[in-house]
Image (tube, rainbow, N blue to C red; front, side, top):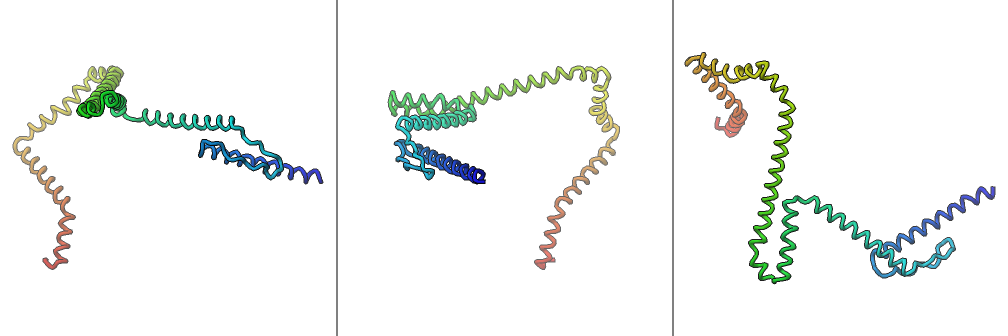
Length: 226
């Protein structure tokens, strides 16, 4: 029974000491992030009773360098992802003209760069226009290629459609038959069709304005005009 009661107590002590040591390491890491100088000396003992070793200056410097390198890597990755996501019509002119402007400004002075203001304004616009034109041509070529592939794949279907006489039947039904029916109607039939079309349009117009007409009548009745 003594052994059974002693074992959980020892496990709890080990867990408590481990958690306190982890908390101390986390606090020291936060201190390194805030200030480049070494952190203040930790307490000499933890509640467990055992002494805690103070970190050496070399380990502190190495940890600081690792934190700085990891932060720089994260920043570089974020910047590269954001640059890759920008449209080429904005990214390429900026990559060309911003270094050019800085070089001219550093070598010849701000007066020369000020005289070249039309170049800094019109140059990026022209480059963006060329890039958009090139993108449009590429999309047009891709679309033409896809349509050509579909046409080549459907050539047997089109050949059967023409050979079987379905093309001629479709042209007759869609083009020549309406013309023949229109000729067979005569003047009276055409005038009757025109009258029916005018009546249909008039009824559509009445149906469209009917709600407005009803609202106007209600308003006139409330205003005692009717």
